[in-house]
Length: 198
Image (cartoon, rainbow, N blue to C red):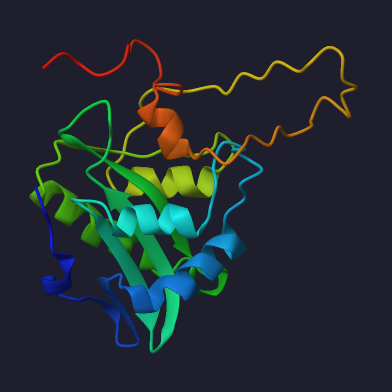
């Protein structure tokens, strides 16, 4: 289902902040905010980049929103109807709020705008993931109607011929993103074996 979020109404948080559909004019600030708040070392298969954002802006069934305070982007959410294992499920991949604006309801308003549009696109469920130790994000997801589902563990096998710096060493994978791994069925979770038969 093709979407046009440019005609969606603004969602007011308080007079200074509005939630609006993300456009190209927001791109630089969204990328900068992502680099400021995301810890891609916690999930080394995650790759925050211009490509990550562009994929969302270019996808059918997108739901990309920004929270703006005057001309400043103080938060964003990027999601789409592209959850490859189920055509009727959506995937919320990125949400961020500037540290100085956290705790003011910005994330909740972004989630409401995003999820409302995804449900209008036909989503029966919206899927997201949260790093195991990120209690703040897990709490935000629960507060916004998400419940815990499948747990996925990233298994890593080091090369026995190479010295290992330490047990806590993070493994940086190549340019593949989390979305690519999901599409290829590498992080599908328990009891799922690829796409369901049509």
